[in-house]
Image (cartoon, rainbow, N blue to C red; front, top):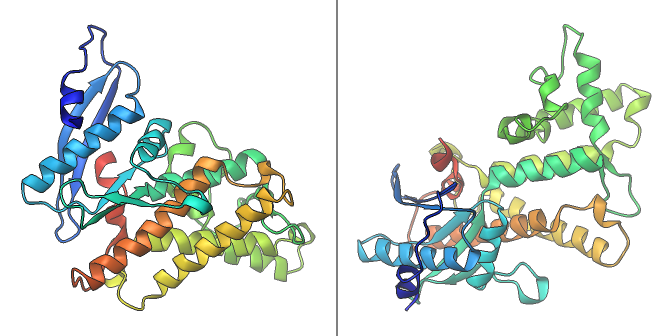
Length: 311
């Protein structure tokens, strides 16, 4: 019935200005293959997108593939599609998967593209200049990252040599670069802030929460972006513990906001929070499924990202 509804939609003579691409990516092999392209005038409705997703799953399964995950970015139509499939980030009604329409005994876990999420966290901090995670602790401040660069930009010796002006003076182009966000929320920049605080630079007073936040973001992104077999997630791997702790951390932060202890502007956008919460839980569930049920030796979590689609 769902497929019939798609095929009987009235055609339009308007020129297309949007393209929608479906790609299949294998966890067991180094294979990624576009399987469908659709064009539309304006963004496709989320409810229609959900129907296309179901049709794509049925076709892949009928061809012998097994679909266990669905990844998209944070576009509003994609989030509407999530809702149509029963996905919810609400604590009281949390659900990060839906039944496989081809085989109801298997679940399909839902992901938001991790590199995209990293950029939205960075953009929020850049725009509002600070996050408040715990009402009794200092804020996470964008200015501490900038101060490391300002100290080192004219120095021959640098703690963080990769930093450039483009990391901090963001425009529409630089906001799209994952590399800039990853290098700001990196272990090396956390060490840089700690270094100048320990050297008693007055401008780094109360920077400890920024350091802690940076380590957390670095560890989350690393766990969500494992690309090579040597770093793949195995049983009893520390990455799973990192992700479990991240869920607790996110929920505590959101609770502080919902109880009015922290202004909403010092929290992530709701879209980013929901994307992170669902993606982290889906990563835990999918890794455990592949290791325990499918007897994988390791899992490369970067295969849950859209990198191959955007090459």
